[in-house]
Every structure is written in C-alpha cells, then in structure tokens.
Image 1 (tube, rainbow, N blue to C red):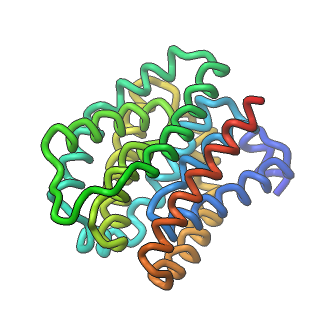
Image 2: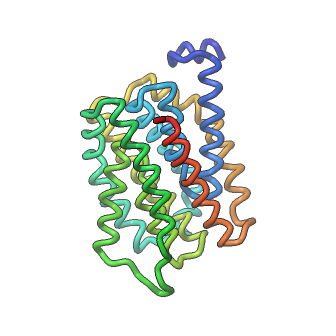
Image 3: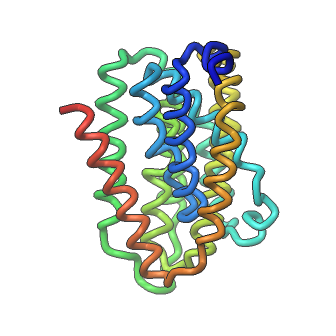
Length: 252
C-alpha cells in the first residue's frame, strides 16, 4: 500500500480513504444508476485539487462504463438517451475549458451549487402520464449535462431530474442515465487529454481505485430491483440531498 500510495503522491491512509469513498459512491451508482460523481468528486476534492478530482471522476466513470453495457443498451430509452448523450459529448469541452480557467475556491463553490441544484430539481412535480419531452428539453438537458461533465465530472444534475420526473419505470430510467454517463465519460476523457489536464498520475490512481469501484457497483447493482419504484425514487432524492448537504458543509 505504501509503495502504491507513493506512486500517486498520496499517504497510505489517504489512498485507503479514497478507496473507501470510491466504493461507497460506486455502490450508489449500481443501486440508482447515478450519483458516483456527485458524491465522489467533492470528497476527492478534499485530498487532491478540484481540477484533479474532476478528471479522476471522469476517468473512473470511463472505466466503469462498459460494465453491464449490453443490459444498459437493451433497457435504455434510446429515443431520449442517445440524443442527450450526443449533445452532451459535443459540449463537454466547454466545461473543461471553464474548469481550466477557474480558481480552486470558485470551482468548489460552483460544484457545491450544482449538487444543491440537482436536489432541488428532483423535488419538482412529475410529468403527467404519457408525456414525451420535446427537442428543447432533450437538447437543453444534453447541453447542461455536457458542460457540467467538463467542469465538475457531474453530468447527472440535469439528467437525473429529466428521468426521475418522467413516467418511465426505474429500470429504463437507470439504464438511460448510465448510457448517457458513459458517453460523457468518453467525451470528458478526450477533452481532458486535449486541454492537457489529464496526467499519468491520475490515470494510475484511477486504475488503483478500479477494484473498490467495481465491487461497490456490483453490490449496488445486486440490490437494484429489490425495492419498489417509489422507494427507489425516494432513495435517489435522498442521495442527492445528502450530497448537497455534504457539499454545503464543506464550504462553511
């Protein structure tokens, strides 16, 4: 552990703490279909810089994205997930440029506001039965998701309310979100390499954290489907609420 920690420039206990954070955030992802970046990036920002935490969060999402991809593609609502994903991928570099030009303190504040905004959004009333989102809603969700991917490794805040407020079953919503997040992770990684803020150190760290992430995602996925839809939706809201409270507390 000591030699591995030295390799990535972290103390052994710090690396162990990052692994525990990653396991917990990945468990939430496996259970709800989202939440890993919203929870993990602010926490990782306590031990590495916010910019590094964002890039690391994107790399981790890229590594976990192919896990269960066949089922995700089968269950997702492609009529909305595919266009949202494509638009988000196109706008991810904008967020990356903004991150590169933002000071760490301002970045922490904006990431906190994103977490709070996501929680507020899921409290809005659900769409009526049979409602189909228009092009503006789909395109707008993709644009904001892409920018937030590049800036905070958090494509979820606009995507989660989009699906949670719909009448789609949890299985479809979860798969749709996972598909979008994998696409934004690809775009985010390419943008990080292009801007020059992805480093070998972060790549090695992401590989070290893959095992706890995979285990957490597996355990969470095993628990998905064992709860009623309304309980699942409540759990999603609770996750966002906890992430928002934690983010605010770190600023105080």
